[in-house]
Length: 338
Ligand code: NCD
Image (cartoon, rainbow, N blue to C red; front, side, top):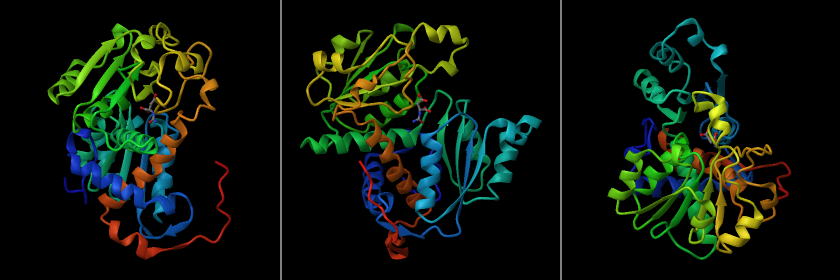
């Protein structure tokens, strides 16, 4: 794919060499993300950040990634703050706001909405999550994390991976995008653990199988975890259910904690979650007692979001080779505790 000027809407746009390119650029962003160097390569550029659904990591890390490249962020959060509540169409909003920024990242509760917006935008648009459909930058940072965690264990590459995805696989857009991304690799075993009602959409299972992957579907977490390299937990997407009570039927169905981990996982199984984890007692899909488990990668995963999102901006705005020439060392205290 040609990155400069492109929208990033779905994992389906990517080929394997595009993924490699994103990850190579992400590695090169480390001195900036880790606050050893600053770059002003995007000095004067404006990111339009439009989040019409709640978000912590995605919104803030896209914004920080842009700031770390020297650009400025103009943020809109919630429908109430915009003229979409006055009946303005996504088309008109896109035409107007794309005149005010160089690139836009958008999250919206409706599947397909970000693509509709992008079609009317005069600048590149990145999908920060469109309903239950996709969340491509999350899939990229997830795979980047998987690759890094396995490398730390002395394993090279994604081919041959065994991953278990746990929870709401029907409405979880992160797992939808991650499965589509995995179709670019070879010989992956994907164990899909969910209540029967929240199974992975059949067309995505079909895409995995057509890629030659082994797909196992189960509603039993404990019995399914023994062979996985990665246990990827997800939150029940209560906001996507027709009624909130229905979501309550599933919250708390799967609870990964240290006792379960010790009994059923391999000693080096990596635990991931796109976050937020629902830590309320009735859900608690990923227990706090895992916080000291060195294989709990969730915060490293969130940190990696900065690197991958910086890489996407650098590629889309075509400044990869200029990042280091507009840089200098930082002049403040930068030691981090962890
Ligand atoms: C996810 C999302 O919004 O799809 N969060 C994220 O972006 N890291 C997952 C979720 O909300 O459960």
